[in-house]
Length: 271
Image 1: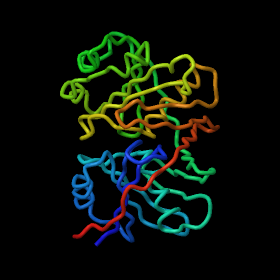
Image 2: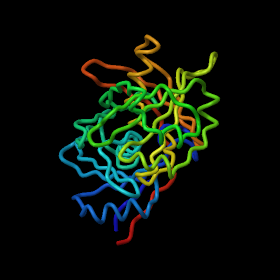
Image 3: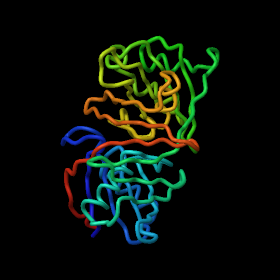
Image 4: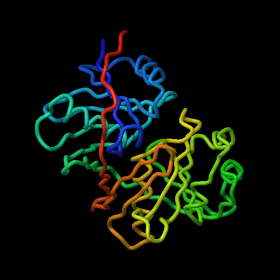
């Protein structure tokens, strides 16, 4: 049997934020078995981690369909499990991943993720795939592309939060953009607590819409900080569940993503 936790990440309320499954391991299972567990959990990501030394772990993340090179909410969930369920001492945990070293630090009631920034570059109008506009169902003109490992993302900037929230994408069309996923964002409304809002669609990876995405904010933070002339922003992901995080640009191409976690369940996987 294996321990299993489910944590709602980037929220301090149950049934909000992004749920992630976390499976602590003593040694790696086969890739096939980890993929089967992730498919059975049927959440955006299942995180598996293995100890290296005190406070140091290897971590991997699987969607129901495949392994991914970087995942923020499941990393926050893993740190939450280590600190608050497994009794890890200290204020910081270090994860070693396919995207390099990732640290998570306690900061009051929140957890701070130190992740790599993912820069995005403009896509020339003639190179914007027609399926972005067809799939989203709205005119698009401001499209950028960001690439993290083998995980390319189209960043689509819309004119308003109202347009963003009203999107009802055709997932079959967006899936044709594989290996690209589609991250849509807009400037926050005047008087809002949030500098920007976003939604994230990954149908070809087995996730139609991800509720709250740390990796996406590795793209959004440098983009919006540059646009707004700020080093720190508050961001909201406007999915059905919804979730918020504080983003702060650091030197050497890093970003701090801060948010809460809430335990939903703990149990055992019977193999």
